Image (cartoon, rainbow, N blue to C red):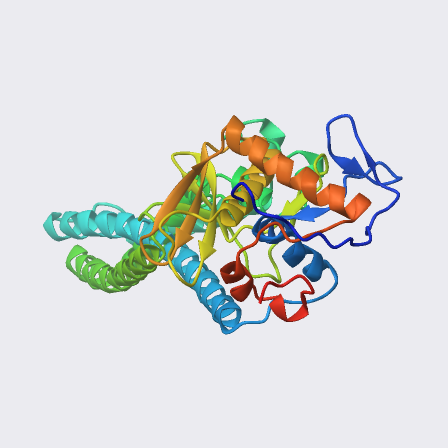
Length: 398
């Protein structure tokens, strides 16, 4: 607001008249809980306190741009979800292909060995029975290793950070503390179980080859046919992995994400968990939280006209999400990201200056909740003209 401007002030009744200001500047109710302030509240309050006040009275924003923005946000979330699904399928198919490729290598070696052996100087029928028993034993051991938590019982295996009890139910924390790429022990820490199953397959194939043939040439033929069939199946898995990886890369590029950037949170306004900071009263759902260089970075997607620099109201909103990531994970993000359309990203530092900007805004909202007195904070007709709640505002300049 420039010097010399006058402000029309309209008194508004408080929503929490019993609240008191604490020693840290945040306002708390009679039970000692910080008054709740959402990131969206802060965005509206910073734009104009009257916009925030009208929203508290139940006046929703009305404009074509808002409806279009909802559709865009929904499309972005669906795109992110699809990207995550393609990435998982790609990893899963590639892992299966790797297992099967190991089987193919063994079968190929055995095919060559059987073909070039002059004769077999042992009872193939009895030996096939031994191989069948070994295959069954490997299968049983593999199943048992999957079902029984033997690593925990023996105190061996990879160690992972323990999830704090108060954070167990939060949607953000589960992907954060779960090792990236860890899916039920198969991508990491499950190589023993995988080895048991692969051994069972290889031994069973050898048992059948020895049981149902009369000489090494026939055994070699059976193994060769089996190898070719296994190669065809493995090639299908590899093709699926490549297709899924390509689709994931396309969707990542569409959302300005790196090919390996992990998305640990994506808001759909329905199933995503609300993040809450009990100390300040902050709460909200960022559009996304991504992992960049091991840091949790909140991202806010903005639609509509692309500004030359981020609006202050948008900056305060994304700072709220940075604070929530900080308090929820216990890990301070170095910055947060505002995204306006395609390839228009702005980094907002999570430093002391911006932290003070955010918390001053939180305290400002809480003060109005406790004392009332919301008023228009500008004398700009153009700002009122673009306000989506102008239809219900008594202080509008137009």
